[in-house]
Image (cartoon, rainbow, N blue to C red):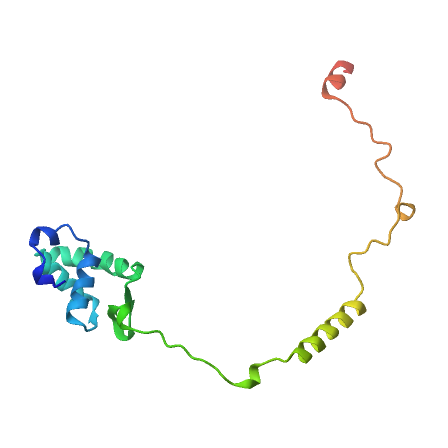
Length: 148
């Protein structure tokens, strides 16, 4: 779909990001945000004042729309035009054999056996001191006022 093929009444109902998508798709080249938003405003025949007021909103719109990607030096493009770089590391140095895993497990078990359990409670009730609050008496406020 070309921008020039869309009737003006239909363009007026479209979101800025949808128009920007069509522009980038048509031109097949990355653009700075000012240039892209200027083309959006020109397509909608918006005044210059609106360009200055809405450029920050347009930037936020592009950053949240997953169809767009920000490139180096502030250029924007469609994500579909850029393939992610996938690096496959085929080196055998990173492979761990089953024997190495078993050795690691054995070492871990030995370490755990050597450690004391810090949460084991060795105190029994016999070792506890006498309760200091044993002679405490609870007085009800109403009882206290009645005795006064």
